[in-house]
Length: 618
Image (cartoon, rainbow, N blue to C red; front, side, top):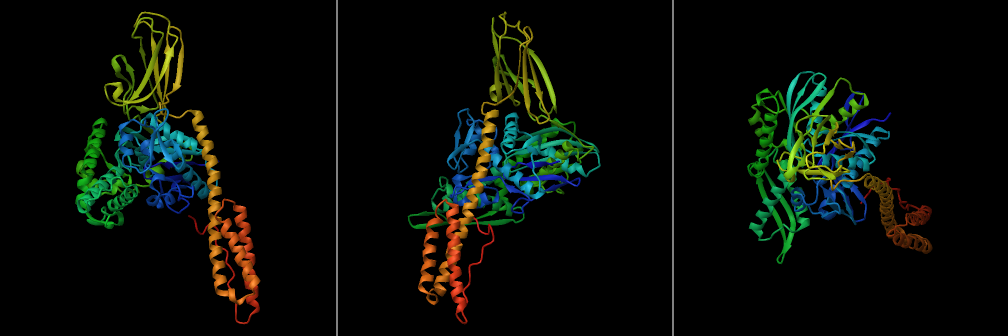
């Protein structure tokens, strides 16, 4: 029976884990690393790249290298968050027909779910290679403050990648699962999760056999990437002061600045000062220009202060929404790479009055917790009950555009709620049910989850018809809605689909497209490898001609030259079979040089040695 893998689908990096022998274990990827960059690219040779190999070529191919796609998941194009992020990424983001964001990759406009599916597909394939068996089921984590549309988008990405998503769980909750797995104490803990693109804090009670979330709060659009962007702005300003040149419109320069900013931020976690040295960052009339800027930890902390302060404010709100005081918290679990920043550690310590707990790897703890939840669902892990909450209130729009709450934030899930409404006009034959999520008083100020029409209402004076609306939130935090007109008994049940959401047909089409591209990518990879081997063989043949051409009969030399000329023609084509045939011919003709040299005293030619399969890749 196949295992359920646990996946932390992160903004910056992703990880996958599984329960093996009763113990949660991080699975290394094909490159031997425990985390995988959440980056997808189309190379200049049209090859699809995912992970570290995509990250390596980002500087030379910024417009076709997609990172931070998680921040576009479940959003409409016109939302402020999308508009803000569009300004700082080098790739193109467009508005789709249904209002969602589309990302331009290669020659296609793709949904964020499709890009995320490529990352999930690599994690799935790497897990299968490590486990030696097929993987079809997964638990995937999301930020606690992800709304319904973002959770559904994550489920859809899993489906496109060929995964049956058994559960969506919140990242802080997963971290608590990992922490509580080996802890047999009754404790009150806070999980402080500062990731690449999101921030969450959850307050939980951890016991022998139960992990109960008591409150959660966060910002689904604040993370380490925002600090990186502020460093980039600082570098652009410094360069403008020193060189009088603006780099803000130079995509190649911005990509290099982005990488330099992230590197400097990491270095300043252990050093008090670092130097950002980028040669040939741009050029002017007088020639190339170079960037050399020193940045101190104090300057970084000044740049990051607004985000650190906001994180502590959110933490205060989460504590206030729980039944506890900050003094009641036994442990503060630090999650996410950004928590390595000394200023964040110091701010958490200052607020809680105690040292945060850094005993668990902040890059891996979420995937480990997801694997434990997978083990619970599979029956491999016993005696753990997880009780989570809904992060944002769910409301229905009522007369005057008011958001009338049916389910309050921090309600335990699964849950349901129902309320009876009526018509606002005489003889109204239908009502529109508009569901929103958020804490604002007016529906228009919250996130719209979707609308539907309940029609067939009998004619009656306003206020007479009785329309019962029932909301059901499942264990994934995903919503379904039922509306029923009590007089006729007419009922309509729907899974809410956001205006930018995917239909079942969309998902199947994207899944088929992903499968087709996987075959195409495999074939293209094979072609590139054959071309690389052909290039190496041409080099070897030319060296043999140079070293031994004047020592063998002219017809042997000519035969090799003719075979090399044919191979040079063929290796630039897409005909793999023709390239391999030409390579075989060159190898055969080179063998003749070896035979001739063997006949001569004290002379021996080097025959071409076969390259290890896949030894070089573009």
